[in-house]
Length: 70
Image (cartoon, rainbow, N blue to C red; front, side):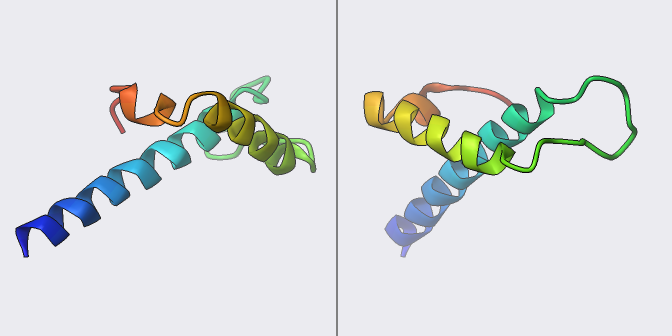
């Protein structure tokens, strides 16, 4: 059972890092403080996915090397 728990933990950590990468990308469009809102172009998610896929193909470990806090 501990092995399965660590596997779930590793996948959860990976998912958090993917989410953080997406958030940082979307946050880059913010031009002024809008409180709890970020206004982004309609195609921002598509652009992020293309960028993410290219980065992942070049370096599949790029997310697991980063030590950013969530």
